[in-house]
Amino acid sequence: MLQGAHTAIVTPFNKDGSVDYIRYRELIDFQIENGIDGIVPVGTTGESPTLNNDEHMKVIEETVRAVHGRALVTAGTGANSTSEAVELTRRAKELGVDATLQVTPYYNKPNQEGLYRHFSMVADIGLPVVLYNVPGRSAREIAIETVARLATHPNIIAVKEAGGKVERVKQMLDVCDLEILSGDDALALPMMRDGAIGVISVASNVVPDVVASLIHTALEGQWDGAQYLHDKYVGLFSAMFIDTNPIPVKAALAMLGKIEEVYRLPLCELSAADSTALRKAMVAVDLL
Image (cartoon, rainbow, N blue to C red; front, side, top):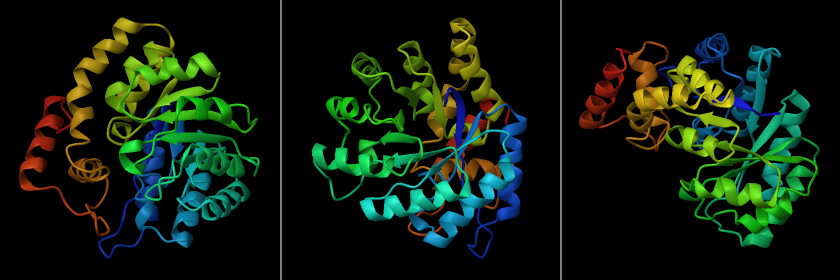
């Protein structure tokens, strides 16, 4: 279902800090016109922690409307409160999304049984679920054994793997048949060599055509061509994480004139040194 290149899309803000829905719809068109298979709104890259619940659902609603069936929509509706994740997911299902991205509950650090019950309860709503393993953000890894247990639920269909461990792809595929998507642009190709079927990308906000081409080329088994694209753009992929995501990618989009460089606190602008390094990475691939 989720094979291909999916963009973890930014949420652009106006200068007054409100959501810029006009620019947002333009970004979605830009993604789809350049070959992206799916849009993932209100995840980490979409600054979901600083959106209130009404804004969160409005962004999802606008995504479904703007995509208009041209790509898949996998909405971020996770939370560290199971009741909140259930409510957000139920409302997203009513809005017509194709799937939900469920981040590992963060800060309260549930044990593996708690993770199993949390994800299972969300999956019971009936919307296809993508588990999001990101221990760097959540302070808790979804154990391989827990992934295997969750894979028996008919609505849990995939894992976004963002733990920085390529070996987890084979470890998961050894115990279940879930679809695996890389959550890290720089590891997308290595993970696909081990059986992943795509990426939920940050860099595709800036270079959707490149990321789509890299992923589709790999899916066709043209590994040399995919490796060439990886090698050419890996510096840019790395630059997208020169500071906390989504600060660099929003700065890059602002440099390209696609959005205002506006964040909501506690996120703020890049340092001068990091901004210079990001610009250098963009110049190196002829983006600027």
